Image (cartoon, rainbow, N blue to C red; front, top):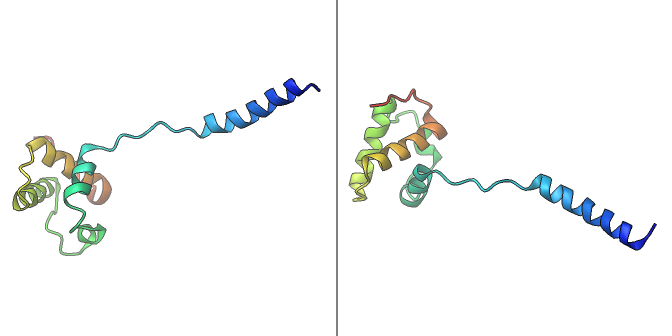
Length: 100
């Protein structure tokens, strides 16, 4: 075997696993970014799993997101409220989502 052949084989052996393990970068959804930036300081997973949760359905969840962003003075758009509600719903609640 020549040194060139061994070197080529070594490069292929090192390159193939690196390519196979490469994952495309996942863009973080806007709702998750807003929640993690503005809400997570006070709200951990326990708040969403407690027995006395206020949000009982999709409409109630959106209402609570709207309420709390207002209390915090965040002035989110309707789209921002919906995105945060979608993130929370996908992560914790799993309510049927009603398009309005």
